Image (cartoon, rainbow, N blue to C red; front, side, top):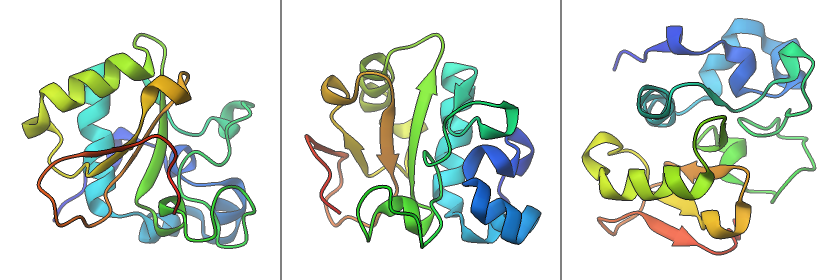
Length: 143
């Protein structure tokens, strides 16, 4: 599977510790299905942000999280390169979630999302394996 890595800098998708340790090889830790979902989201919603620490921002844990990260659950999908928190300047989390649900064929790898009514400023999605053939929406993801 050829992943379109030119849509993102690796620093947007991993935490600073992982990038410092592995540099461009940090791509190794990302699920190709999750990257494809991110590409589809960028195509659908325009500029989206995962992490912005490279440009002096404060988002460092919205993509892949180093195994030693204390952010989130111990077995968070973020720590497997399958979970991402996406922010948009042009769409709310609820608008993005509604669009994804209404256009499932454009986002075939997304299997789980956190209820955007609760997150408000970001949309959590992940690409974990699920046996059901629909996107699961959780009020609180307990990973």
